[in-house]
Image (cartoon, rainbow over all chains, first blue to last red):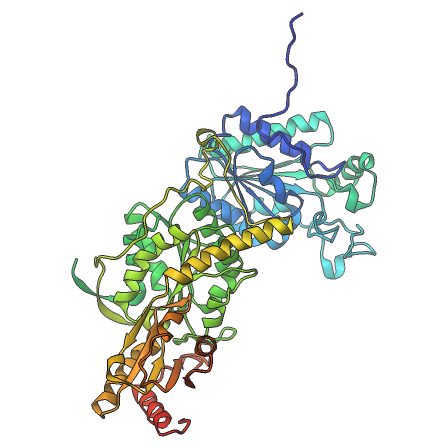
Length: 253
Length: 358
């Protein structure tokens, strides 16, 4: 009987156990990034930048050259790499504490300069690695270890929407927010990643794919319930969709 | 090219290009602005990279990225900006990446002032960022010495896989002096950067990872000991210093570096004209501190007078090296005040009379 391969692990990831918790979507997102890098033949020329947070160890998982950046500085590190290696694919993989708080200046200015790089932004509305502190993206009334009675607008502000914010930066080329809570959305997220890496290959500039994600451990809910909580609570505040596509504008000209 | 009259900052920038600098990342701050200004035009002329970053923090992290992918990289700044770069400098040291950092020092603390100072001595020689690491740091006296060191610094950084700092003060940055940018210099042998994350994992046969994270404390200690062995090699082979007027049996010896050594040199001549012989130990590296210079002083020496444009920072290194052998004295100015030759002459005379001087 002839066998047909219908599924195999991606060569875009190193064959080893991931360090992520049950119910966290980092695993799916890693797989998608790995698949896109492999399918587009970018593995042998890509250089990835790991950030600080739960994904700090991603330099052990992506099957390409990697550099580990200081907290928030991944877009600056990637700028340095891309400027001296312009023919190589350069990407960062960052969480919401890293990108939207301590690394706000670096992400805005990398977009502002139109750096030809791809940012994978994983937003789960909390600091995971350090034990569940409030992030800039934490929802109003969401309880965290530094907002134990729930986040209040007074004194801590309302959650920052990074895709919308970066859409106001002239230098950004492609911005899309996606989710991986069901197969349909996983397929859509992969398409978004393909688009983002294509933008870079075509030297069209800065692209970012924001993933709305989960953190059952620090949200204090069961892994199997966390996707539902994310769909019910996060996606209404962080709507999915394309926030900027300057490649279309270019095509129209 | 022969000798040309150039401003210190511009000469350092040109020396970096001649030293093989592939990329510069910086942020404006006085008194070093002529470095990025010069490079913003001339790096492009040489088909190299110039980026004005959004902050010193971003600039040093761009340096970290570019160095990690194998380039020869430079950043420059001045004291408060160097303070901001410490995070990235610690990462460079921890990840063993070569890079060159020019620090055109000004007065502090805080925003301080914009006049020349040597107040960053402790920050530079004691690390500055977090963790157990050291920089190889030069503190040259003249523009000629400075450009020669800038040119050689890229090969030194590559050789040790360690950041190299050139610590001058605003005086050297801002002053014009005749300088020959094509003097022959000693360079370390080049080694292939087979550790760099160049984006050739398949061709190479393995992935390269640039990291400073070691979650197992025994692994991190091993890494720290590996770094220490490198710093020990620097201590053994890179100490540089100049001994001045030692063959005239001085009883008093100055210890001074950078612009302060320049003023002290003038003071030595004035004192000589008055029949008083004074020597000088001039550290050229301040990290490692040139302890070898203190081992073979003439028998005539009685007192070491440390001179600084800071308030007793290098003095601590002199105390450590001295171990009670000589009488120690100190003269320092701070806040960007540059002493006159006469100030040093008077202090030297007072010390020789047995008083503490001014």
